[in-house]
Image 1 (cartoon, helix red, strand yellow):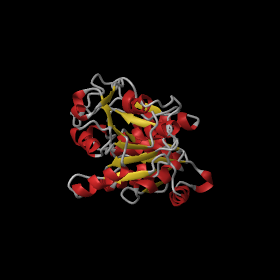
Image 2 (cartoon, one colour):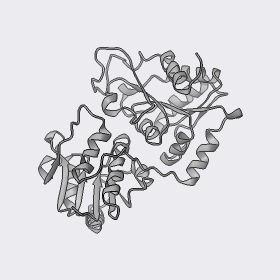
Image 3 (spheres, helix red, strand yellow):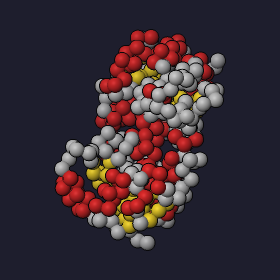
Image 4 (tube, helix red, strand yellow):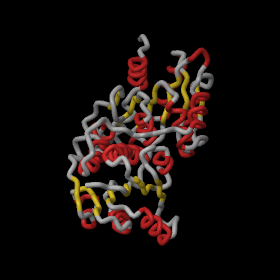
Length: 331
């Protein structure tokens, strides 16, 4: 099959969109002359914009944009094939509205988009990483099994800002602390991040705290524990600026969240803290990362709120030991 116009539909969330980026890379290798477009929600649009394998980015949020404008944009793309990587009724409708002759979705009907797809992919979605599950779509179209390529090209300004922010005195390595996440049950306590920041400072390491405006209270508390070695930038940087800073860090420590997956996609070693979700499925992708879980019997329960604080049972000492190990520091 020779394809020249491909549309990927993956609206959210940030971490899921990052996991799907290698699909564009695999399709670029398979169809080097194709025009690859991506329909994405505004919160994750920035990361798709800097993917070198995507030619055009369309953004859409329900209620924020006239539907006729979106329909016109989709029809201008004129895709021959549309990959619905979201699997919802909404996204399968968008795939159909694009006019694509072939609309490829997940085989299972559990996410609602089953009826409107005319081709279906059957990845083993529960026991492999999300990146590999999404790549099944590209392989369905004949893509190779080369190592996943996230294709992130940071703008020069973001790289320069990141280098300035992450450069410490006497070349001290900087650790990115990423305390934010959408689920309350995924959050490592801010006081544990504060204890870790204090210990990192005593080791001669610098910390930079990154997150959205919703993370400002946590960021301020963490920075107060080690004011001389910690910079709090929560709510102060765009997604692309944060990416530039993370890319210049020696290590990132964070919850199961979009910024954590962004760090892994940028090739930065990650120490990821897990409780209600499964690192086999959504851990930092690639080699050299460390996923930490507390030994409780109800791990991977997928509850957004829970009385059993599995995250609290991950001690700062345990995370600090992982930092030492990953950076090659003596105990």
